[in-house]
Length: 225
Ligand code: FE2
Image 1: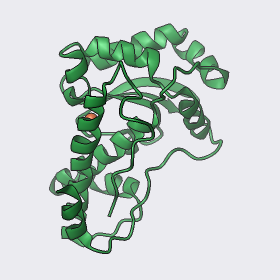
Image 2 (image 1 turned 180 degrees about the vertical axis):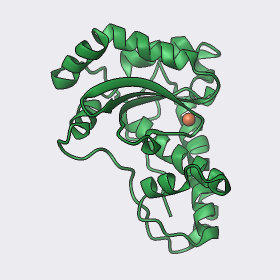
Image 3 (image 1 turned 135 degrees about the horizontal axis):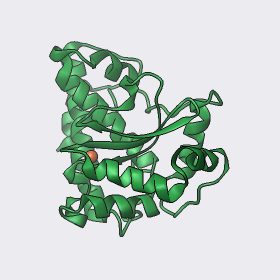
Image 4 (image 1 turned 45 degrees about the vertical axis):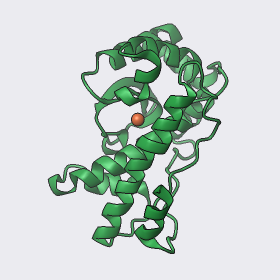
C-alpha cells in the first residue's frame, strides 16, 4: 500500500498565497482520498506494484482502469506539487535561468506564459513547467493526467488548478492565484535538480514507494476514521 506522504512544511507555511485551511483540506481530504482509493483498488485487484509510476503508466489509456489511473496519478501529482513549492521565496539562477532566458525571454515572460496557460485551462487540471531534454515548455494537463504518460517530458514545477487548490483563498480568480503562486512559491532549487535530470545528470524525482501493510485495507479504514 501507498502512504499519504506528510507535508514537507507546516500547513501555514505557504500563507498568504495558500492558507492553512486550504492546506488541511487539500492534503488531509483531497490528497488522502486519492491515496485511499488507490490502495483500495490495488487491494481488490491483489496488485502489488513496485512503485507508483508503474501504476500510473500501466493504467493510462485503459478504460477499465480509469479510476485506478485517476487515483494513482492524482496521488503522484499532489506529492510532486508539495515538493515543488518552497516556504521561502527563492531566486532562480544557473543553467535553468539561462534556459528560461533562451526559451521564454526571461523569468517575467515565463511567468506570463505559465499564468496564461493555467488561467486559460478549461476545467480541472495542472499547469507545468517541463523540460524535453534541454528545451523548456509550459503546458497544462486535464484532470488527473500527468507527465509520466508523456514520453520525454520531465516535470520541473507544477501548480494545481483544480478549484479545491485556490477557491477558499482566491475565490474564482485563478489568474490571481497563479500570479501570486509564481511570485512566491516555486521551489527553484528542486526545479534545477529536475532540469539536470532531464539533461542526463542525476535522477528525476520519484514518488515514495509502497510500504508493507500489516492490516491491509483494514488498517487504512481504521486510520481514516
Ligand atoms: Fe489538488
